[in-house]
Image 1 (tube, rainbow, N blue to C red):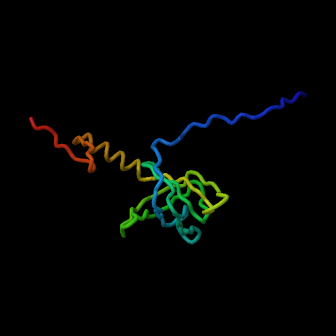
Image 2 (image 1 turned 90 degrees about the vertical axis):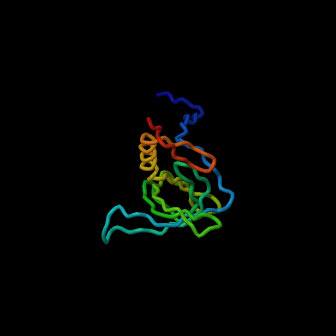
Image 3 (image 1 turned 90 degrees about the horizontal axis):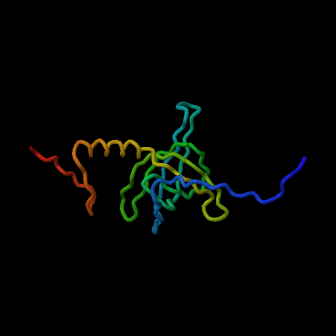
Length: 145
């Protein structure tokens, strides 16, 4: 039997992100809780608290002290710095990495409501065109005949 000796090449990994990430200058806090998979006495919810490291239209990277589980659902709020406002959101844990320093865990979270919002916007744009402006989105009325 012959054995080949050599170095293993790292397989090419395809970038799965569909939107660019933006690193946040000021710490943004995310707090909430996990959603139990089973409703009732056996289903338990845990508190989640951490800081958002970067964010995109598809998700965010959370730095947290407590371990999360991949595929776990979180319902939470993203605090808006300098205000008392927060943005409610539903997220799913896509990946988890243990850090060697700083917060114990780094987790990739995916916005779950994104698909529904995107579909609603696409439906809305078919009814009446939307255009982006410097201040947001402006509705354009359909032309009358």
